[in-house]
Image (cartoon, rainbow, N blue to C red; front, top):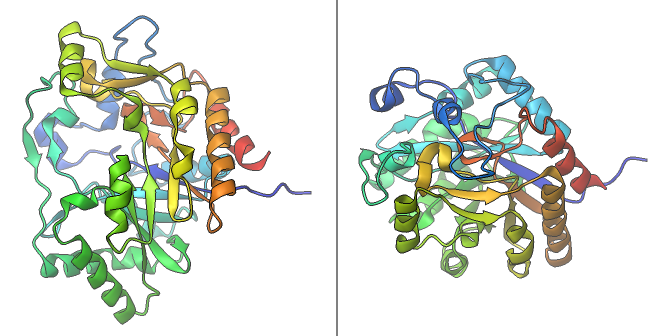
Length: 358
């Protein structure tokens, strides 16, 4: 008898594993996410760095066999689809769009997906671990210019929205927004896309706002979002300006125990229309050095407990769709990834599968 699955899982997917001309110009020829991953070093006693990939190696997402292998591993874990981070900077400018374009054009792998609009500017401090915490440099700015760009955005992505693999909730296309508060045209954007979807024979959009602060839950409920993604990871760290400066002076990242997730996660906020996020691990020091943040002592066993805790709260409190977001499938330079590494192999994949089906 086949065990019944307790919840659906959508995993965030980073496309930063292939060279682009902008990164070549900013960081040097051939820069990808692997550049920061490979150069990471331990910054305190017991700090596990670098993290080295196992099965897939230091892959390049321009290779279709890599994308197929990722989908196969995700199926093994019980993941229902990838949420590709999508970079639309305004006025038709995209970044890191090639992997998704090739997935759409090739129709492979046969694995569901949706889009998460990472609507933020790119700053040097996000990628350079040597930068001072009080300094940053604009690399490329996220802009919003109104209805013309909103329409261009929709029609550029229309091939993705028409793809039969595109994920739906209540028959509507799932589209997540990373920072809704930054977009002065957010309501116009959503209303206009609903109109254009109807015009193009689509059933419309299921818009999800990502919330990183508890106060955003109330804020985004005032906008026409269908649901909220509760991403409370930053709540576990003391990231005041003074604490960040102290970390820089002492040359020691801000840390907390992975077990703090089990103790502090506010599962009472999980209800209908609020989809929680689970985290296999977290360590931003490959990108940010001593001003990064680190969850210490994550293990597959603790990750399984974390997922079970969130599933139990979701099943108990949400009468509708039982959906959980996973942060992330392959954020190697932030330490949150499910892909096999040389220390744990497939153990995190196994842990997620067991939590979903046991």
